[in-house]
Image (cartoon, rainbow, N blue to C red; front, side, top):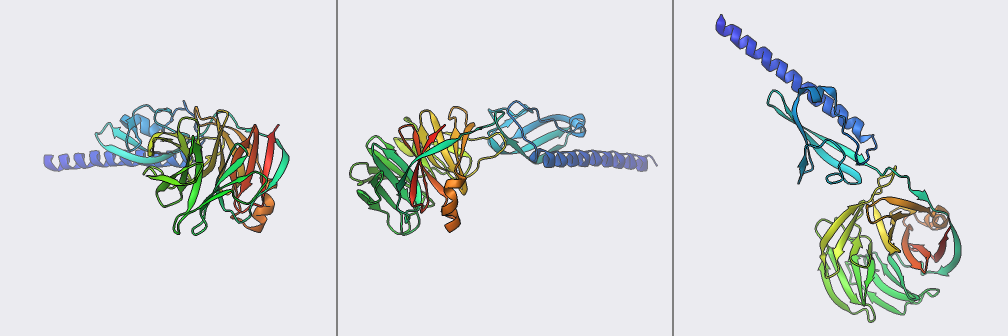
Length: 341
């Protein structure tokens, strides 16, 4: 009888423990569903459910390669945008429970909508699938994409006939480009390669491997110290100009209401990074000190006639002529000079 009683008692304890674990897991699952719809900011607390807190001996957050028991949105661990984490709960009964969660982090300050005037229009070759675009002196340097049509060209603003051209071999899809001194750096889309050219002759000097952490090669600019690249995410990758296959740092970009994935063509100007969003007629003004989007240009009206002709004719060219911005896109017939108000 005593033996039967002990077995029954142990079974009851085991059942209670299982019920507690299930209760904690259910609470964590509900928390994750709610958290995915919430806008978090740096400094916010992760207010876990009462059922979790009351039955937990300890709680930690795992980010894969790092871990913390600080249940706040700490910028040492979290970044702007989507953060995929694992909540690890050690219960008072000695069990370890895990729950995946998504925490979306936004900026506290809303970005400014920047108004502008169109002060000039220039012709642009409508055959060019623009991927990289910049101005140096009175010359435009442009990297055009598509398999079989990829090229690096140079032409004077106001003209469409290239003064210099370097065709890419079949199978290469050119992407963003940037000038560093007397060199031009150029990315490729999925070839995992970048090219370095002599700026004055377009003779190829060398190649480099695109860093493994970058999913693909998209946009490229130079901030005076490092190359800055995009890969279709909300991240800016700072690359060493002496070895562009090496990442110096990674900066996540954030807005007050939007996760700005698919950052694309880039331009650095007077301390800010400008980026368009693939398939959106907007250009963001980004503070490189913290990744916050501080301003936004809406070019819907400019882009509309080109998008009406083909939805792939998206805005994808940013350059600066003095303090004015030059804007163009894939297979656009025009370059617009913009003066911000």
